[in-house]
Length: 131
Image 1: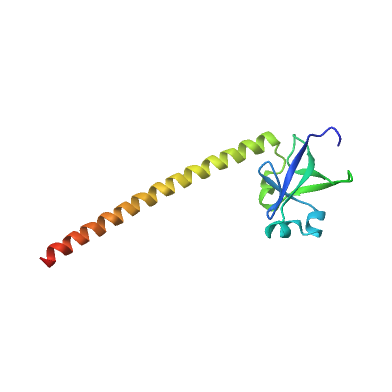
Image 2: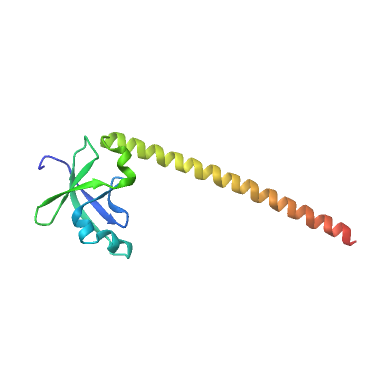
C-alpha cells in the first residue's frame, strides 16, 4: 500500500470525489458524510489508488488506517478500467455533453428567432388591418 500514489479527494453529496469518479465506503455511510456534504459540510480526505485499476481507492484516516472505497453504482459499468482509460472516457463524455449543449442552444436560438419573426409579422399585419 505504501507504494501506491497518494492524492486528496473531496467529500461531496454524491460520494468521495476523485478524478471525476465517485466512491463510497462503510465509514462514509455510517458517519453520514454524504448527507453532511449535502447541507454544506464539505471536507477532504487523503487516499491511495492503483493507477492500473479504478475499481477501488483506499481512504487513509488521520491515524494511518486504510479503508477500501468502491465505485458508486453509476460508475460500475467502468469496472476494470485503468485510470488512463477512465480519464479518456470521461473526457470523451465531457466533450460530447458540451457538443450536445451547444447544438441544443443553437436550436433554441433558431426557434426563438422564428417565434419573434412570427410575432413581428402578426403585429405588422394587425397594424395593417386597423388602418
